[in-house]
Length: 166
Image 1 (cartoon, rainbow, N blue to C red):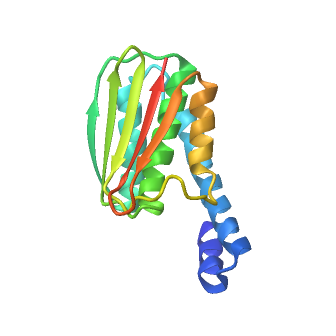
Image 2 (cartoon, rainbow, N blue to C red):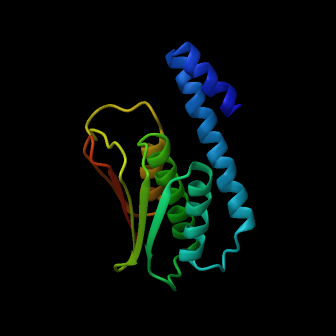
């Protein structure tokens, strides 16, 4: 579905074709996340889970990744799932939308979980309207878990997603 919708979006260039392709990519990403959730043990350390999902995206896309992760973090299951899903979405967006070649993931214990995903991609004007749902869904997921979400980006200078969770 993703391949066919991508081909349609390239040949048709209509808003409907572009939305269809974005929806297909989101569905595929959510399917991968669900499968990961079933196959990754919840007892596995958060840093290990994050490395696995990021390396999966990196392997499929060819992007280079770096990690600066505190070990031994033991957040609640809701916070753990939020961190893993938001990290995967942020890295996927960096590759698919930003054309990033390098993505760095930071997770530290700062009176809670402090996540930063920084890329060297194209960046964008955060005030400009967007058609996708990736940033919105990440923000809603983080705020639903009691955290805060911020996007820092400038056209031509990459993007940083910053999350603070209790």
